[in-house]
Length: 307
Length: 183
Image (cartoon, rainbow over all chains, first blue to last red; front, side, top):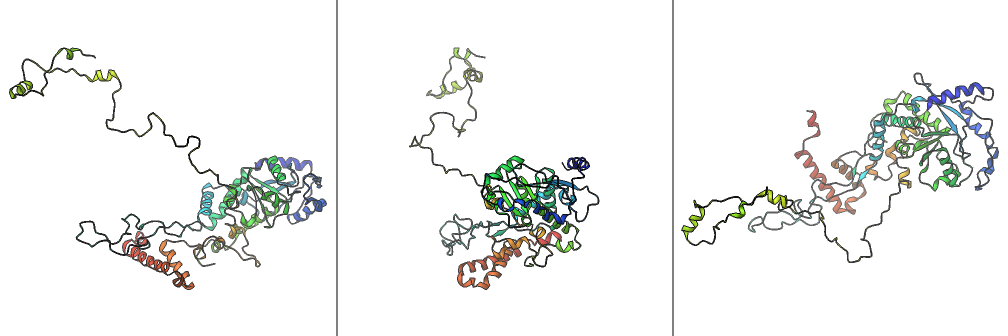
């Protein structure tokens, strides 16, 4: 998919070179202000009157400057869509860092990550009583000799019915373990790469939608062929009002900040939708960890009571 | 092969004869000889020969089905309610597990976080603990004795201590040390 995009844009560039303008990465937020000519009236609960969106001439190419420019891998590119209308409008094209979004997906590492997420917080509270915990059983049932019956010391010994369990579960049993820092880092990279490669990753300019009607979101997802479950990721943890209200009805549309992103959620939801700010943040974080010079300190084994 | 030869001959019964001489004659008498008159082939020809004599088939072979006392109602069974895979807990499972990677790490205003600090549903003394029962109990005793657990829960305090003592003895006298495999 990535190679097709590159070929297409090369021809488009040659035709529309007079209409395109270069936009450095820091100015993305100011460009968003251009689209807010209909600002106050958009966030009202008027389902029918969706005012037409006013945009500068398309395509607007967002040129991103990649931190730690890749030397040996080709840069990947992805479309930037909008959330203002139900129909998809491609606003532009951005570069994605291959070390984050084009890493060869390691299925075993993804599996390790999912297993870790499921297990590390699990505590088993199953419990069985040992013989001295079971009520009663302090007295010797009958004298050692003379009765002709077998000899016993207590009625709660493990061989008795109702007696204690010897090697049963003991509450609480923690299943905590920490996966290595790099295994988790590579898990994120592999999953993001797999999502992009399988056309399950979409980038939008922001999560601002015109109404808080849940049906708007349903129609949008249906129209664009995004999966039944969609995970929207933004940099900020306080999301716009409209999308929060619209997605609250359905459990399969979920909003998440960048720091909440994880392998399990990315696999559980069919489609991953990132905002431009989220892409910037994710790349910055992952590239920072890949290129830091004190990696040994970060990757050290977790020690109890050290935090 | 159906044989009709056996039907022509008469045979003398061995029982019901009073004198010993007659009985001796019944065993051996040159005037007559025993001839086979029953053949397995005849039995097979009549119909299928039953196998596994003495075996009791537990599966339903036919006949009247069991009936309940109430013909109009169905048998009581709990109504099936499928689990909601997209309730809040399940939909957002695993959120913030990578906060030490994707969260703030070197900012002065925000302190870096570790996922063990976000285990709110795990008892505080058990957060980030990895160990066997003995190690877990020692940690529990360390946390609990400061809060007057011995006064508030005397039986449980006694059980805790007994369990620790028993496990110490079992692990150190009855089981091999985990370092033995390196020796």
